[in-house]
Length: 216
Ligand SMILES: *[C@@H]1O[C@H](CO)[C@@H](O)[C@H](O)[C@H]1NC(C)=O
Ligand SMILES: *[C@@H]1O[C@H](CO)[C@@H](O)[C@H](O)[C@H]1NC(C)=O
Image (tube, helix red, strand yellow):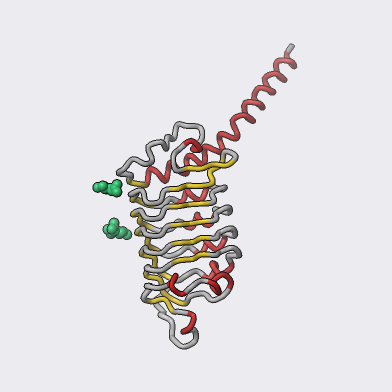
């Protein structure tokens, strides 16, 4: 009698656990997105469907999933203000983070360098400040990095020149300084995509100027 009861009990616990684990994983992505929602001001209520009590964020508007994991966040031009949050670095399957043409301020969290699947990071036309984290050099799948028209300072991290798939980089209209890297993907990026950074030194000047020692 007792062994039967215990194996039945054990079997139930195991199957309940196996049933819930995928939702727990999906929910950690929901938690990350909900933390982002809470740091945003959303005057047009475009994030109304982002309900933290749902088991998964895959039914939320502006969120796309594949195999129950978040692959896209599309929040371009939605009148959002507020800050990015480190929690976004937990979206392990995220391929597209589209936040362009809002009024997002504050810095780019270095945790975005954990997004191993990321193909596109679009933050152009916002009010982002601080420096470009060198951790973005870990994003081996990254193809599009558009950070133009913000208030970024500091140097372009050398780590970005190791990105094997980077095709489009635009950092124009910021306040970056120091040298523009010359190797890897930087060989093919037009100089226009660096313009209007008053203290950025073009590669044609390499060796001919003393770089601004205040640039860090
Ligand atoms: C954007 O939000 C502001 C309030 O912060 C509002 O006055 C304005 O109408 C909104 N613009 C659009 C295009 O929805
Ligand atoms: C941009 O962000 C700064 C703080 O970093 C703030 O003082 C400024 O008002 C913001 N600009 C706009 C247009 O919201």
